[in-house]
Length: 313
Image (cartoon, rainbow, N blue to C red; front, side):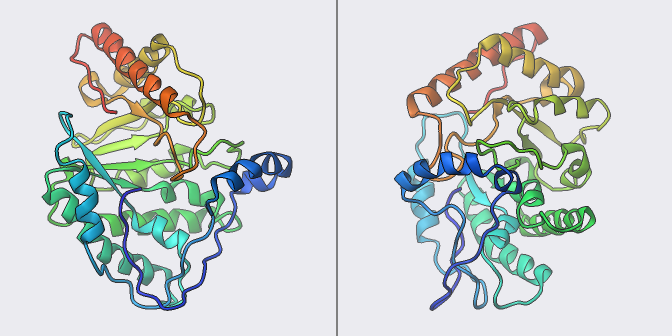
């Protein structure tokens, strides 16, 4: 994620972040993965708690990070920012006493960040793993109806925070956490997709290359993509050092293009190559090779579809 809000606090302590349900069912896997996490010296499951009003105190970090990419040699550059939902899920509420009020407060604060990125001419990417991943974390012991209500709440908050920002300049990334693990409790895409499609961003990024979700390209045979949206499916797995064959990438792109139209597909990766900052399994050299393969596979698909290549890295 990019820069994030500041929660004014004096001694907020640490939030308790539930471990993914699928990992809890496989303690032997956790034991195997733990040494790697300890070597990285990062705490992935805890963050400060919200003990007072949520406000955006200073845009200095936002300004500095946007400046880093101001002169990037790309046709277009995006900057990520967290969704209100992932902030709320990661940082426990010890002030508001009401989840909806807390989500709205965070969304109000994040509006500053969203607008700041958009005003600099960058594409805004809202990272919202909470729209899928929280089903097997924060809502693991709760009903499906409660989780669906959560998705609707967060989508509404995102839409409100985007007031005044052109939806054509906004991307929404939805994933199930994309960590290396069983993912046996991931909620099916088709369950949440009708609500996700109500979000304002015109570009929708969804995992589509990893072994747990690659089959879900078929969802688009029955789910119509709204006319004002573009699908940005993951066609490169970001949780393995295997380098995909360009032919496989082309096949994945073609599947989506045949269902929603070639002009409405932009090839992408499932997630960032380092899903958690400072903690990821893909070596940087291999990450670049994967991106080169993404380019080659997209070019192959474009020839077959007789359309210009659509590529985002």
